[in-house]
Length: 360
Image (cartoon, rainbow, N blue to C red):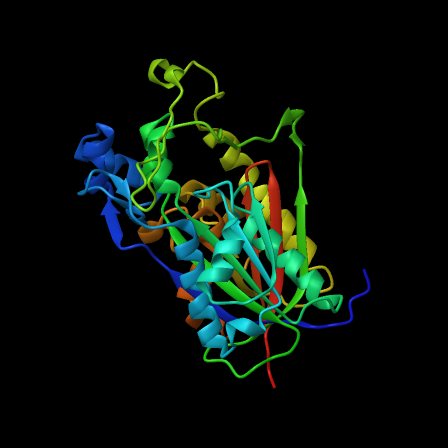
């Protein structure tokens, strides 16, 4: 594709739900001892996380996915000094939406007060935020858009009862992150970056086997939802499920495959977006999977590259990992000669982008 327009990251934002839990806070709800909770922290690297679920009030979800996305986008737009009604396109990425219909992007549009814009939802795992950035950049480069908002938002903790093993409940957290991309730099409260190469691709197999790290069926347990009056119908077979029942009705997570694939895929994304780059040092903002994944990713990357890590106090935020980690570490990325955001998701999809600080 001929690239005519330049692409700039002019605004970033993040938003967290009001509930924050340590591993010890979660332990009683998953029949775990404090000792086991500490063990999970050591194994995963996650010590606490924000959640949309109010454990003290009937273990009910109190915050919607689109609220996290829209509030993060609002912060990003304010930082960029851009009126929401100047936005051409809105992309929302998530692993777990609250509703199949209508789309989350449509609701984000309404919550931001945007009268009209194109909307897109990307769904299917942790890489979808960066995959959306890839698509948004292509729209801008082709002249089909001037200003695009991309969000990644998660309510994964509301699905915790569907997890097959308690350890998964101690990995994930909830949050929203957002970027504002434009075809020209604007006066911003934040450092402005130029996006250069972007990449998004999917491997269907690895060593001859399907690359399905996590499988999440639509049917299944979810925490009661406070914000809408609903009559939940749960399949009776859920009550008799065991770990050997297969994954037809319940979430499965192949952690061994994740530890093997994630570093390789993130290095692949890193290499693809850096073709032609002369920088021999910089900052990498990777998917914040687990401590073993981050450790293996750091070992996979070349020397002189700093890895951004906010896993311990945020957990794995899936699609929101990269925008939240970069937003919370702007002091580290602002002066870097080059920034590479690289991520990987179930499926297995990887996506990446190379950025440099914009100098007037």
